[in-house]
Image 1 (spheres, rainbow, N blue to C red):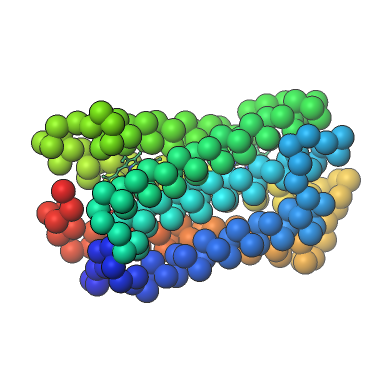
Image 2 (image 1 turned 90 degrees about the horizontal axis):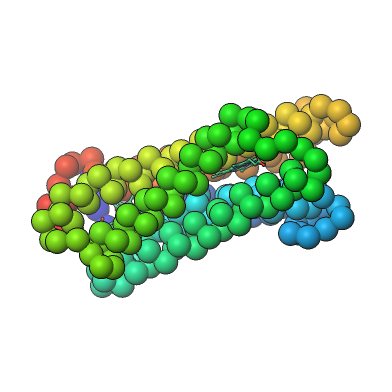
Length: 231
Ligand code: HEM
Ligand code: HEM
């Protein structure tokens, strides 16, 4: 397995960057061109909903994915890469929290009940675990920082849990796209099943799924040597 450590960008990382950029473009195209745009405050309530998919894809998935890749993909010193990892995850978390706030706001202002779906339950778990992972990572590896022995012991767990949380966010997004498209295919919209918008939503979801696969493949420790060299 080829490795790039903070200098060269390998093919898998490059594929992940391209998929990340594509996911953002596709979700924006859908929510702005087909769904009428984004607003946190509006009389047109669906515009408030539209903030949700955009920020959930941009936050825990795209910024979170880039944060995970950042230790390997950036030509910076280790300390700088750690700060980039931390900051990108902070931005991903902030966008995710705002995105969840937007969908609750949309539900409350439209008289729709909260937390009735599988997507919403898995979603609450995903955003909560993402917040806990960030806090644990900050305390252990940044400030105040655990002892070197504890860091060494916990880092593989941090990486595995971090990857699981990321995968959970990707899975949550799959449920979200499916649920929204199913709503739109029913009354009153009755979106055509093979129409342009339905295809766009499904392609956006596939792109997010492939991004998840690319990030996992880009960082997975196939030859088992990585953690001997990073502490
Ligand atoms: C990491 C990604 C995501 C998380 C953590 C997440 C989380 C949530 C949560 C917690 C709710 C419940 C809100 C409430 O009960 O008031 C919700 C609702 C919703 N989300 Fe997401 N979401 C994510 C991505 C997406 C995406 C990409 C879509 C695509 C359109 C989407 C579509 C929906 C829809 C249609 C609802 C309203 C129906 C329901 O409550 O299930 N979500 N989401
Ligand atoms: C939700 C937040 C976070 C997630 C999902 C996450 C996830 C990950 C993942 C998957 C890795 C493995 C990367 C690789 O093998 O190349 C990793 C490495 C690491 N993370 Fe985090 N992380 C988060 C927050 C933080 C924070 C706040 C810190 C504090 C500085 C931190 C410090 C580290 C360190 C020191 C490594 C080892 C880097 C290396 O592989 O050389 N993480 N993180």
